[in-house]
Image: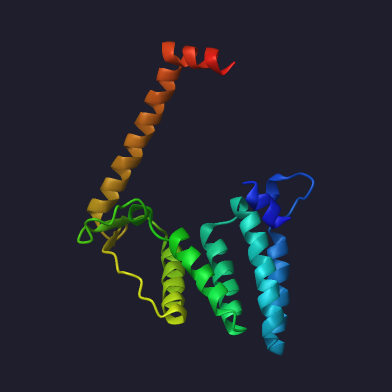
Length: 191
């Protein structure tokens, strides 16, 4: 169900027929903790994979760091049972998903440029763990990017606020333009 929903760009939590609640994740985690006591690595990997599928299929109900923790557990459990390539792929996806937006949107042409990091501390920790494990398993080095966190320095914080304010202004302006002649014209052609 989770795979089908995600391929169609929908969260399972949005489908009335298959209501999946986030408490299911807690039950899976209890089961994983019991399996850890028995050191049943293969079962832990299987349940971690199922939990990660549920987590990503209801991602709209969760914090990003909760998703990241489940993905870290998933990748680690796969590495523990010798599924190294799959673990590397999970970590690689996390490096992309948990990278700061300014780095993602950067062309990379100016590596000396410092990027403004707007991630939470928890997201940064998840990124660091994924990076460390990716490098360990793959033998590849992820290039270091110069970053400054918006909470650590006043200037980046001001810059982020200015950009957000400018985005709000542009959105308001676009909406007001849509109510004018062009907006009416678009409505005519949409019908």
